[in-house]
Length: 88
Image (cartoon, rainbow, N blue to C red; front, side):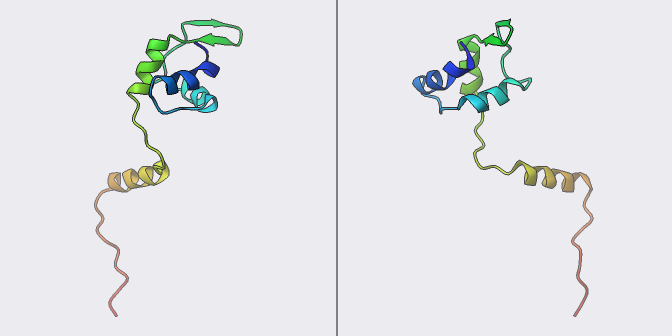
């Protein structure tokens, strides 16, 4: 199955529709299944592997990953306590 076919097949399988540009982004990651066939620009995937990937994927719509990263950096700096503004 090629990427242009995936959005319709995902929707037909009862999984939230993911558009082709986003699938191309995901296909560039290490988590996405590897193509079973490649020739030139043509890449084909095993539908069962793609279905398993999208079926087990955690959706994080609207999650601010930049803020999450900042919170993790804060926790790795150690507990420095609150910064006081002085007594008034």
